[in-house]
Amino acid sequence: MQTAERSVLLDRRRTMALLASAAVCGPSARAAADGGLRGRAAARGGLYGAAVTSRHIETRPELVAAIRTECGAVVPEFEMKWHAVEGTRGRRVLRGADRIVAFAAGEGLAVRGHTLLWPSKGKLPPWIEAWPDDDAHGLQATVDAHIADLAGRYRGRIVSWDVVNEAIEAKDGRADGLRRSVLLDRLGERYIDRAFELTRTHEPTARLIYNDYGVEHEIPWQVAKRGHVLGLLERLKARGVPIQGLGIQAHLRTDAPFDAAAFGSFLDRVGELGLLVEITELDVEDREGPADAAERDRQVAGLVRQFLDTCLARTSVVAVTTWGLSDATSWLADPRWGRKRQDGLPSRPLPLDASMERKPMWHAMDSAFAGAPRR
Ligand code: XIL
View 1 (cartoon, rainbow, N blue to C red):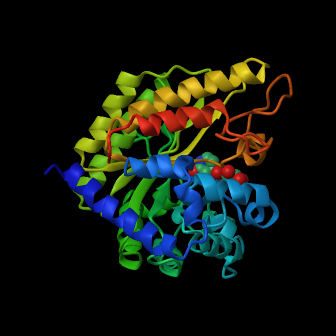
View 2 (cartoon, rainbow, N blue to C red):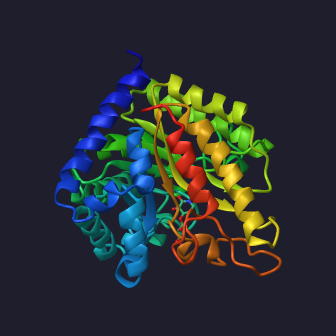
């Protein structure tokens, strides 16, 4: 049996065991049986979930009801990130993450962990970014303690961890495309190896994932980034790092080309490394789309269908997570992140609209799951 196939088999057992143990006590297991994307994905041996925040869970009962129907998993949108957990050194705040993990357990949902190390500017705690030049040992010990604490806290309750997020940035000018950061500058590339090894030590069952964006569309910088991502994965595998998969964020855009054959070849090359793939943050920026919502929804759905058909044709693609479930809570509605439309109309990036009604994107995902070979 091929390495990737063996990983899928092991992985399915791991996912189903986690779901079975959680679903037994989850009051909403019945809801999932009525269908929803959770049921569609599970029927093909896959897992569908969405990003949430603890505030959404506590203040949006209509969203919670939709999560019960549609999701087999949730992932904290920001509450497990180091800069959110420990903005002030030594004062670790995990109430929100704990709330989400407890919610998932009560609802029979799997939990994705996101993310132990995110080296992008402003995504590490400021006191880490300001670490003294001459204390690499102290920095490594502090990173280790963070990973041990967070991975250990949720030990056995995380189906897959985004161990390292967005470690590649070609604009930083390195031949290997690695993102310059205090971690890379002080500890070298092996900070990535260490993060995976330590996570595995404290979390023996979760899939360990390297997560990144900007490999999906057929535009030059994204095609080039695929090469840098593959290079990193090859080096990690050659060094025996305990990595099980690549997370592809899939923040898609309707105004960028998508080449199913080229992207499919990229997925196949990841599979040839014996790695699984998770689609980890699917949404679609429709900024350049027409004002008419129905037409924009059709464009978004068409792209999502083509993208997911390409992904799910590979049984190494084992999970799909959207970055939110409803347009009402998308990060793209936040002017800090989403490029606002010229006409000021709200973006429509997710499977459900602001009233939790299923959109053409939902139907595109439903059809893609239904037409996929079983994992
Ligand atoms: C975003 C969240 O959605 C925002 O709420 C937060 O303020 C910033 O981060 N890639 C990632 C995610 O890996 O963690 C980011 O999430 C979106 C881009």
